[in-house]
Amino acid sequence: MESLGSISLFVLVAETRSFTEAGKRLGISSSGVGKSIARLEEKLGVRLFQRNTRSIALTLEGSLFLERCRRILAELEAAEMELSNTREQPRGKLRISLPLVSSLVMPVIIQFMRAYPEIELDIDFSDRMVDVIEEGFDAVLRTGEPGDSRLISKRLGSFQLQIVASPDYLAQHGVPKRPSDLSAHSCLLHKFPSTGKVEPWPLRIETAEPDFELPQTLVCNTTEVIVDVACSGLGMACLPDFMTANAIKNQQLVQVLADYTVHTGVFRLLWPSSKHLSLRLRTFIDFMHSQLFVSDRPS
Image (cartoon, rainbow, N blue to C red; front, side, top):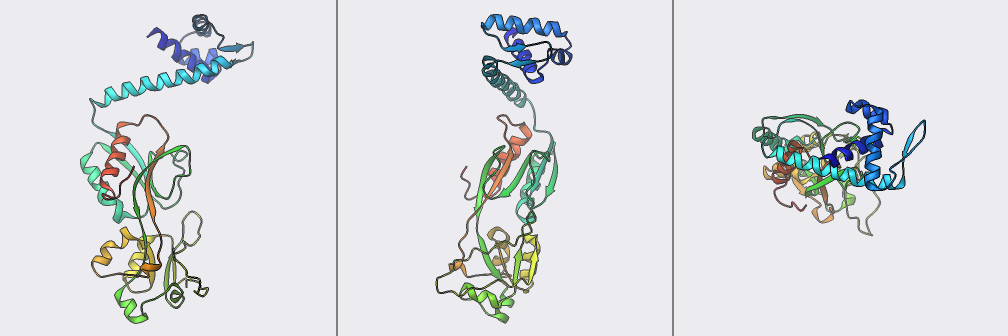
């Protein structure tokens, strides 16, 4: 335990670069801190800090020792947390960001709230690319591949985009046989909230196909609105299969151009990189992984 105390003191001095500041935080004198560091250096047989009258800096040996000491303290913290977690129920606040697809995530969130009533949820529904760390989120659910090295992710499942329209719309305007036929149809388009750019439809275009553009009958940054408009018979839309499944089952929508639609997307849960998770966050991650996308759940 004496060695752990010396290690904790060394890490604090290394992080504050000051005997005085480290002493203030621990309630001891700067001279007492200096003597403790000197004893540690004598024990190790190396100099950990370069000192002058105005500042201190880590030596090469000190930098190497600091990395190891941080690992030791992290392991100790993890061990304490594991022991504490065996006695506790998950509780406290979780701040999470979810995409604007409440029909997909809300049934699972409701199940989670019933299963863990002592966890308080602060939910931000948004399709924008939030900065998980800077904005203080514990976890976010998003599509695509992670692009931030500061985050850890867990794959929850995959989805496909489908081109759909209502039976009434198709009866009135006809069923498109090839992608270029879409130029004569009303198209309901989704734009990305973060960039304002229209999301392209994943169409496989054959060499003989003429060039064409999708008519912008409606452009909207919320896919749930597009589902409602498509079910109302006002145009064709390109939507994720998890959003169209019930409407197709209830014969409100029909998939078209399936042979020309090539797409696979991925849903991931992301959270700040940390070797040790709080019990409430680990519980949330495990629950979402087990309940969302029951099929197709590779890690």
